[in-house]
Length: 196
Image (cartoon, rainbow, N blue to C red; front, side, top):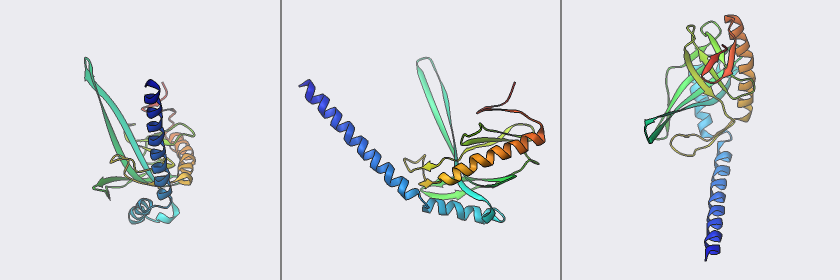
């Protein structure tokens, strides 16, 4: 009797794994030059002068805050979404929102060494944080290679391996340019930008 439950449990686990794997593969395939990426490109073309000279990508940021007291612990996860366009010396970051599946955008930011106090990132990683002249965080982003629709918090199917690699290379040069200009040494640690 116990063996039957184990076999049934294993079969259910395998079937669920196959369903999730197949769904993920379908979403990845849909993400190659997807409608979502076309929408990102249209937004960038509308808001960024000479948009064709930039690499365009989709970016996200996620924070998890823990709270509560005693025996009860609560977690709050917040998500931010962006269209980004970058080339040596400049990055445009455009906030995105999704309401009922429709993508809309907010006020774009154009960031250069002249209006930044520093850039923090870890070489080779997919994230970067940008700070104003008072060294307060303006925005942090991750340009990941694979974004698939999983739930309302992951609203797009976008596969962007080349753009993600280009972002890593861009950040390396941009960080050196901005931080050299401001004579700042950063830590490469998320949330703790300055070396002590």
